Structures are given as structure tokens and as C-alpha cells.
Image (tube, rainbow, N blue to C red):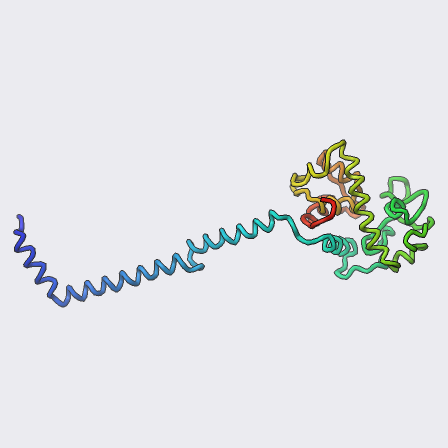
Length: 248
């Protein structure tokens, strides 16, 4: 059955005049406003799932940018971190000696100080490969930078330990370059070895732990190694990654 248009109009007019219908419309309008308000708030506040995802993506991008920059600190920060690791103390002392006879803030051995011109001995400790089981320091101190004895070195006379560690890093960097079969160190930066990203500072720390030969084997053949205490070269490569060093 169809309803005539004029009857439909009359019916709607009467319906709109009723209080119950008016109250219903008002309630629906109020509910609509509340829903709209809630939706607006949920999209705009950081606590909402949508907004939170947007903010998180932004924050993540910032963090990623910082990580991609690869900079954790300067050269001094790097050396400080290395000294803390080597001595196991937050305020690394200069007059420390471990059970294998490595001495000072950066735990120098006979072989390194011989290479740097501070010390001389016919049989330096080189990890036991030559039958010598520790650093005995029975050789001769050569007077470089005013250092004439082991005690002078431990006392950090003339700030020698800071001078020597920087000499050591430059020296080792050059030796590493010479052992890469004509390839440059830069070729390896950003690559991974054992799941660890290679960085210049990581290479230097790894060389301090395992020597330039250990680093060359790692870079060329992905061959890891450990020191006398079982510390992996990969641990140093990872732990000291991302510092600014003057050999990049």
C-alpha cells in the first residue's frame, strides 16, 4: 500500500512536534558530538595507537639517524673507554700491573714498548709463542721521553702513557694497512665480521687486544681469535665501535 505525499508530510510534521522525538534527536546529536570528540582526541594525542605509531616512527627515525652517524665520542673518549676496559676500573690508574706483567693505564707489554722505542729486550713476551710466559721487564729502558725505568713508566712521568698509546695506535694502523694484501682499510669499514660491523675505532681496539696480525686475519679471512684471558677480538671490535679516530 502506498502513502500519498501530502499524508507523508503531515505525518512528519506531527512527529517533529512530539517531545519524545525531539528528546531522541537531541540525545543522538549529543552522542554524535561526544563520539566525534573522542575520535579527534584519539587521533591527535600521542597516547593513541595511531598517533603513537606516528610519533614512534619519528623518534625511531631520529635514533636511526644517530646510529647511522656512527659517532659515539671523540678520540679522547675512545682512549678513556679503552683504559677503563683494560684496567677494569672507572678511574684507571697508571701504576697498575696485571698477572701477566702488562703495565699502566692501557696495559702495555714488552713487545709494544720495544716497537715504540721505549724498551729493549731480546725476548719480549708475545703471548707465549717464543717460550716466554709473561712480561718480565728484565730488559733495558732506552730513555725515550725521559723514561729510564719501569717505575718511570708506571709513574706516568712526562705524561708518557698518553703519548705512548697514541704512538701505538698510529703505529698499529700503519702495520694493519701493510698486511691487507694491497687493500685499504676503508674497504672493510661497514662490512661485518662475526656479526659485528667493522669501524675504524673497533679496528684499533681489536689491534690493541690481538695485534695487527689478528686484525688482518679477521678482515681478510673472517678468522677470529682470543687473548690469554679468553677475550675475543670480536668483543673489542663491537665494544669500541663508532668513535671518531684520526685514522678514518
